[in-house]
Amino acid sequence: MPLGIRSPFFPMPDRTPPRRTHKVKPHETVRFYSAFPIFQMHYCTFVIIGPEGDPETLVINTLAPFNEQLKVAPYRKYLEQYEIVRMAKHYKLDQHNLHALAERLADWVGWPGGVDRRGLFYTTTLNPDGRWDWYEIGGRWNGYMKGAKRNVISTRALRTSPHLKDHLPCYVVTPGGTWLEHERFFPDGFCSGRIERKPDDLWLREVTEALDQNAECRVVCVDIHN
Image 1 (cartoon, rainbow, N blue to C red):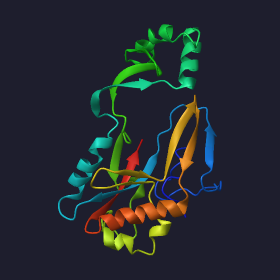
Image 2: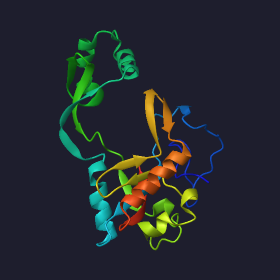
Image 3: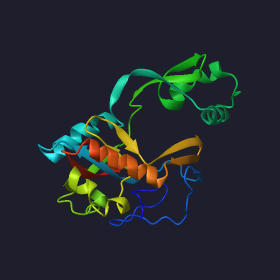
Image 4: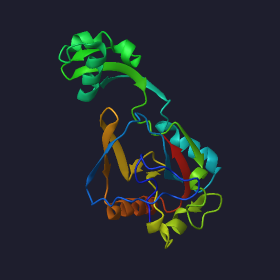
């Protein structure tokens, strides 16, 4: 059975999780190349909330630190080599002339930048912990958690459910603000990148440990979009 969205490149049916056609060995890195530079998909996320209170309000508070639109204190974001190469090609500059490239950063990314010992950077206030641009309780994953009512279930009931191992999420968020994930996409080129995925048995163990550590809480199934 699928574990939430298995990759950000597989289409998501309206109601049922997608089936994967490519078997991946544990610890295998999966590479992707595409003509599309941006991928936006729906991820099944289990948000653990307290035992009392309105689930919607508690989900809002728990997911707030991971909002992609959240502004943070200015920090330096360093460009990867593939970004530098692409930028240099666009402006017809030498990719090794970082100072010349730095002068174009405001035009390139919309933020001023510079060069230091680590390399070419721009200063931004975008949230480095951003994981979503919008979400919905249930959404395309409505009814995915067996035994839940309105996509809410107690952690004890979910932990002991015989369906848990076949209905795992892609992400888990704890009340303390810990974001756990089964897999993550790392871009390493324009329209290309890799997915690093934990073995299924390890991910099952991480999910059950999170449930055990919050045994008196509840779990909300959320459709995360990013």
